[in-house]
Each structure stands twice: as structure tokens, then as C-alpha cells.
Image (cartoon, rainbow, N blue to C red; front, side, top):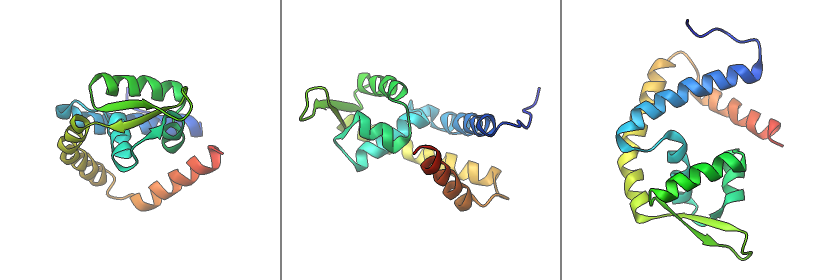
Amino acid sequence: MKAIRLPCYCGSLRQASRVVTQLYDQKLKPSGITITQFGILKLLAACPGLSTGSLAEALAMDSTTLTRTLKIIQENGWIAVTTGDDRRKRCWSITPTGRQHLEQAEPLWESAQQEFARLAHDVDLDSLTRTVFQLVQKVGE
């Protein structure tokens, strides 16, 4: 059965998210990094030392899902954790191994970007990303 148009806003966004995630994950597969892991590594490369809470907020992820993903990335040796000023606070940084994997994955991610742009050639992608971010800000408040 082919995908159907859903009358639910949430269902439609989740449907789109799943197919886009599948596209990116397929392109990133040779690197061993998923698109979710890639986003976390990119953020930690740009902003080392972020707490779990700050990461969750920046990525608009729930803490449980983020914690599971962080555990996998940490087990791979791509990130390291330190204790913050409060012993309960965990701060994350990308490791040299993580940075190396990220660099190897970036051309694959770029390929996914190009493939998505090709498939969505008739969509104003700048407007799309701007609109989606506005939704994140409004609904996530």
C-alpha cells in the first residue's frame, strides 16, 4: 500500500519525518551514523560541553529518547561525558574519534541533502525549514 494523505497535522508531520529520516539514514549508512546521531555530533562539535538538558532543548527532543541515543554514541566512543557543577548534571563533548566519524559522514550527509533537494525540486526548501522551525518554536513553548 502506498502512503496516504493523513487528515491529522501531527500524523502528517510524523509521516514526513519518517520518510526523510529513512532517506538520510540510508545515505549515512556507510558511516555507521544515523541522522539523529549526526545532528547530535554536529551540535557537540559546535558547542562542546552542553548538558543533557541543553541538548534536549536545542534539538527539541525528549530527555528519554536523547539519553538512549547519547548512551549509544558514548558506547561507540564518539562522545564523552563529564559531571557539571552539580553532580547530577552531565555535560557532553565530542571525542577525536567522534570528530573523525563526523568528518567521514559529512560528504554522505551532503549527498542526502542534495538528494532531498532533487526530490523536492518544486518545494521552496528555505521556506519549508523556516516554517517548520516556527512550528517548533510556537508549539514547543
